[in-house]
Amino acid sequence: MGSYNGYFNWASFLIAFSIYYYYKLSPVLSYFMLLVLMIFSLGVIELAEWQKAGGPALWLICLIVFVTSWAGQFIGHKIEGKKPSFLDDLKFLLIGPVWLLHFILKKFSIRY
Image (cartoon, rainbow, N blue to C red; front, side):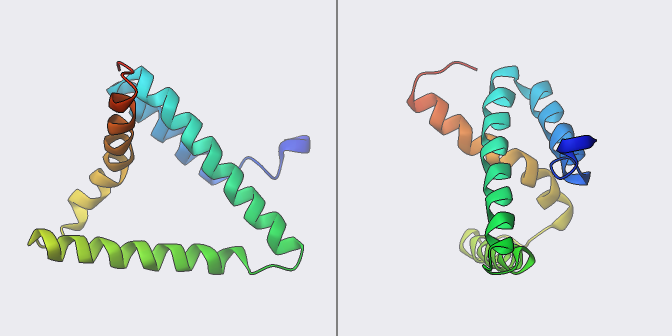
């Protein structure tokens, strides 16, 4: 892949699948999600650069974010009074970000 070798990997295919899924739901939402995912990807690249410069390991930062988010998910289930169902959670993992983006677009009167 030449000079882009460090930027395309298995996660690129996961992002492409996600954007296609969002496009099937709503093209406008998919464009905004692509922008959000690009910003998050840039953040991960910056964290990797920080690691190279002597900062904390990228895997450690990702692990902390994952564990914190997973704990937050269980706290949310406790507040809602519903048991976690891991098969549905996978579906909500893709729908959740678009659901939040929906409120932002609605606030700015952007039709989707």
